[in-house]
Amino acid sequence: MQKCKKCHRQFKWSELYLLPKWKDSNEPVYCTNCKTEHYLTNTSNFIQLLLVCLTVAVTIYISYFVFSVNLILSCLISFIFTLPLSLLFPFFSNYYSR
Ligand SMILES: [Zn+2]
Image (tube, rainbow, N blue to C red):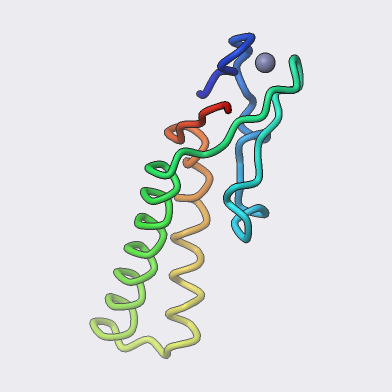
């Protein structure tokens, strides 16, 4: 898990989980100890976006085209696979402080 660049305090998973913040990925995460702002690196942001897009594309393709599940249910299945994946993002995301 990511540590603060200034005071080396380890962030909690809940502090780094960004799902509600995906509208603005540049929104900083603040260290609760020293209040230093940390921003998600572009590489981590790209990897997260790529993983979500790939998961959505693969699950919709498999459920809709291979198993002939209707499109709405395919999207729901896709969401069911994507949500647990997103829960893992705080473990491998990198942040930097300005
Ligand atoms: Zn800190």
